[in-house]
Length: 145
Length: 62
Image 1 (cartoon, helix red, strand yellow):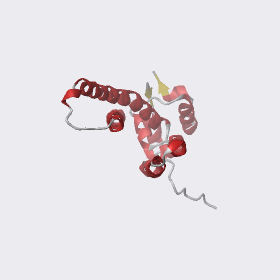
Image 2 (cartoon, rainbow over the protein chains, first blue to last red):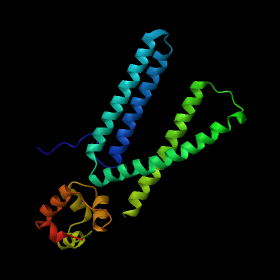
Image 3 (cartoon, chains in turn yellow, brown):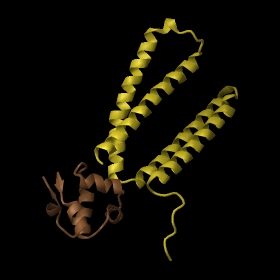
Image 4 (tube, chains in turn orange, yellow):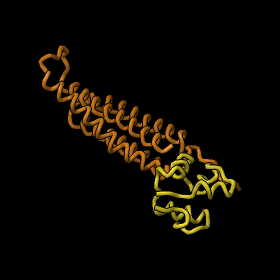
């Protein structure tokens, strides 16, 4: 009997898209869970929120491990290179923006809470790192075509 | 590092996709190897040698 084709391909754009969708679904569930448990007062709500976020992160990491094992060594090398150079460059750019924003704080016109400011800084830094990562990943492959 | 991958593949009338399947890597990786812009790991170099039934030193050179 011929080997059955796996539902989720091991490599290629389809594999990447499938894993991204799975990770996105896990993130969505974590967001919904956080919203529900986060509104509960007391230590139970805190523990449940922590639990749902930790479980989601663990699941997302498992999806990443499965995807990582399916790609070949050049693809892994491209990601490692992009993680180091692109991620670090993005982090440096994010740090410049955040440090500049810190010293110019008095000119801030909005009225954000401490949590909102923290989340904004986190998202800004992550966005810079993801952009740097993407640029470095494209550059790695473009150089080897 | 230089290699004779393109020549060896052409001698066998294999496409890059054929070689990629034989090695268990992507076609993009085969292309990167052939252009000499990516040096394979030792396990992959041994696999290439096995696929072409030649010693590693006859495929790769400094």
